[in-house]
Amino acid sequence: MKRIYNNINLVNRNSFGVVESAATLVEFDTVDDLREYFADQQPRQWYVLGAGNNTLFTKFYDGVLIVPKSAERTILCDDGESVDIRVEAAHDWDELVAWSVEQGLWGIENLSAIPSSVGAAPVQNIGAYGAEAKDAITVVEYFDTRTMEVVRLNNEECRFAYRESIFKQELKGVAIILAVELRLCRTPRPNLGYGDVIKEVESRGGATLSNIRDAICAIRSSKLPDPKVLGNAGSFFKNPIVEREVAKRLLERYADMPHYPVAGDDTKVKLAAGWLIDRSGLKGYRQGAVGVHERQALVLVNYGGATGGDVIALAEYVCGEVKRCFGVEISPEVNIL
Ligand code: EPU
Image (cartoon, rainbow, N blue to C red; front, side, top):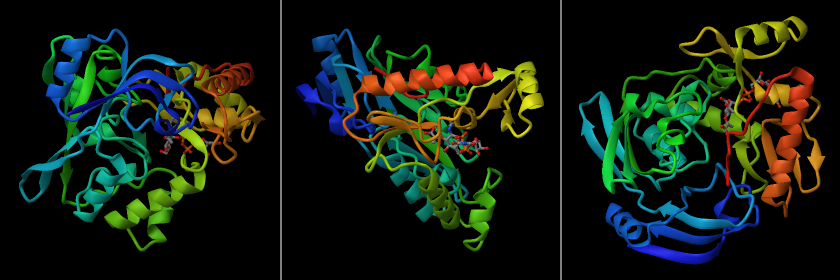
């Protein structure tokens, strides 16, 4: 079944809580619904809207928002050690993590409490606390709007990288993700190397799945605003990747600047956008209805009644200040429509 809505208000469909609307929104259950819709309507402009946690609407969207509604979870194979599961796009990501923790399955516990649908997870390869969705994803299944066929990509074919995948590149405007397959495992493999994770896990009695989940949830909620209370889309900016020379020059001046290696490329260094924004003096900075969050400078928040344009104006100001102070370009992680 599919349901079509015209002239739809989006305020409850984006975690920023900005007041914008769209010409059309189509919710679909099956791939046949999609096939039928694309064959009949041939929409010239469309965008997949998951739970709306990483999208900023800046104006009336004069196209079709495609919203997956199927959320089934199936165990494909269980050999006593690895368990392969298939999860449809509309399934809530954190409910999947909670389920895996209850089942004693390792692999995605560090990705607890990330506001996302399962279908959105591979697009920007969601990541936190030393883990990324790509570490568990084996297959992504999508509907190709050019050929009207269902296509399956394996992990390598998805070309995952930091906040990147083929779905943000060649398959942007082509693929509608239907389901994701993941491989979890029963052998404990705690990944506690990031920041305060080990301390928080030990204070809860050691590295069990539920202690890790609880620790990550506690760390996140101490730093990141709850979108139900204060509109936001998590990190607004990506951590910038710069040439090693640039990082070296900055480190001579700012010895405490956080910096991380880039997997597979030792000519580059990843910096922390949150630190750069904070040290530009902008943590807690407010501009009318929007601001830089007071506990995590990576996050822009809507204090109520902001438009997408207000958020963009603030984002541009923040980028300009970081460039002026450090000479480093930062760019949005959020999809801007
Ligand atoms: N920092 C500051 N001030 C700030 C924020 C950060 O000085 O206001 C410093 C921290 O002290 C730390 C460094 O910057 O030394 C990095 O900060 P943090 O550990 O908080 O992580 P992050 O790089 O700011 C990334 C992800 C988050 C994820 C955390 C934890 C990106 C863009 N963000 O943030 O992801 O939860 O790591 O792994 O990669 C998201 O994508 O929405 C998100 C929240």
